Length: 323
Image 1 (cartoon, rainbow, N blue to C red):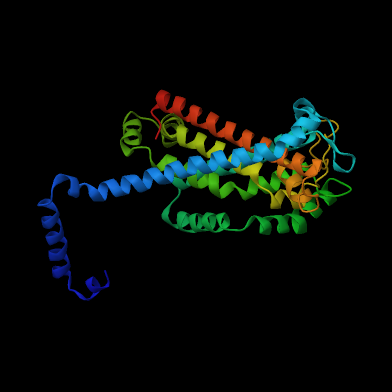
Image 2: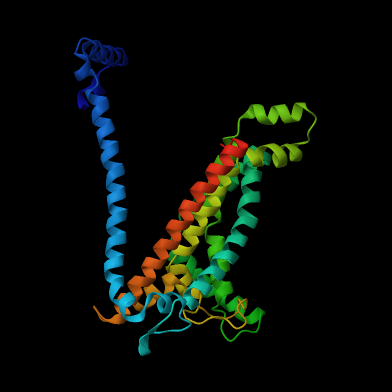
């Protein structure tokens, strides 16, 4: 209502009070009309999100069925070779490489992000927080393609020269890049969880003679464990679903490392294969449908992780009374 801006503050308050006085004389059904409208909008939004998720699953399943019928479920999921030129499609190399990248990236992510969140929430002073917090928010806004570009220019040559590799593009490069890339997100969520712990818990622990570190270790962290768990599981989904950054540095060769823990070997993840091959594939070919099957597998894995995360958060919340 633009005319409100030219009124003084007293008249605005009068207008506000007159509105609620008028609402109070209306029948109960009309008084609840604004609330019902808001409830309906929220319900429509929730139902729409569910419908969209069902449509995405349905479309991926429909486009994946030709590859599933022709290759077979077991051969498609557990096949040891992905060679599109020979119409050989086995996802085991993609699964192994994706898990290697995700586990290493998450280890880097947690090793830096969680201690940083503890420092920001419990130990930092006003000056250090005034510097670190905006820096983390700035890093969170950097596009993934920029991280990938920096990885190609800086990280890949460094790894190649340091470890005497033929090329620095490797599973290790993808893990380091993704681990650094998602530090701001895990730090922000963990910090919010730590700050949500009631001050009374900390004061009670200190009053009983516990040191600051003992309070953080035995009181704050268990109370915030549900939020920290949510941050970790959310970052697993982000790491597995990242595309452009990992595509530029991982090498994009679909093979199982030999030995399997050789992180210096090149590899390919679910997302890098989809992004690298979808632009060249013929529409309606077996290769085309196999890539949709890869997307379906990726969506199933992320959905399972989300459900496990919800169950873990609920169990931790019941055990520790998390916040």
